[in-house]
Length: 354
Image 1: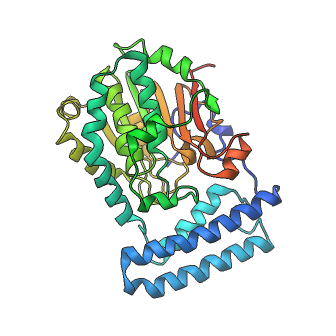
Image 2 (image 1 turned 135 degrees about the vertical axis):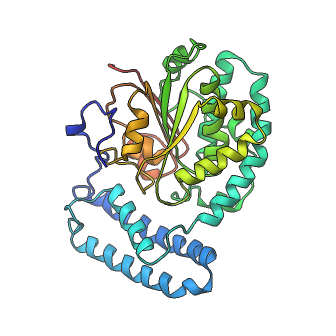
């Protein structure tokens, strides 16, 4: 594990700069959020693992409550003396895994992937009658609409148990200008294709279901069609409803069975899936897998998608290549920090050297 090879200044890179030791009001909000969310996670764990998980859930609940109580008394008590949202993610997931609760949202991910895959052919067919600027803008809006499914956010957790009209969500999303809106600059580079500006792109994927299947896959499929090889980078271990590398491979293979163009692109080696080596909804690019670095060494574009990877961490990170951050804001604390509100959109495009 080492720094991501495309970081401009790895020696000064900081994945997450929200110091909750210094920010007492935000610390209290986040500690309550994680306390409440842990209760929800345990309900999903019970559904995933059945009655035999009762003792494990009870032990996990006790351990997490003790850890939160310790942080209330001494905010610097975690190893390393830091406290931020990334460290709270790690604390939650470590506690679950230590008690054998390694993938508590697995059944939800599977269900949401199946539901999104049933709609995938219709979403792709819609692209066939679109051209140029209209198509690329639609694809970015698809990413925003897909990113709403997030089991780490109170504002959207309930959607896991509801059916939603994805295409209506795309149409009815927040209008431009978005909270961060570099789309015009992005579109100028997208519309130069074919040939594509970028020979290879590394895409850090986020959630299962609509997020990956109907948001990211149509976008990267279109990039591949205009000549950009796509490296999909996903978690090594499960966390919330995030895609793992193994799940990403499985879903792509199933989509290729109903999408001849995607199947042809895969045969032409325009897609590669790698593990980031990481295990949280945010991503710390100071410690990623050698596999990712080998695949990314000659990439010319980095896409960070999702509130955790693209906003809570890495929004200000500097890269050697063009970078695109895409996310829908689903947490009021995160939105407020950026001067926005829940369901605002972030499209930050930073060409190399700017």
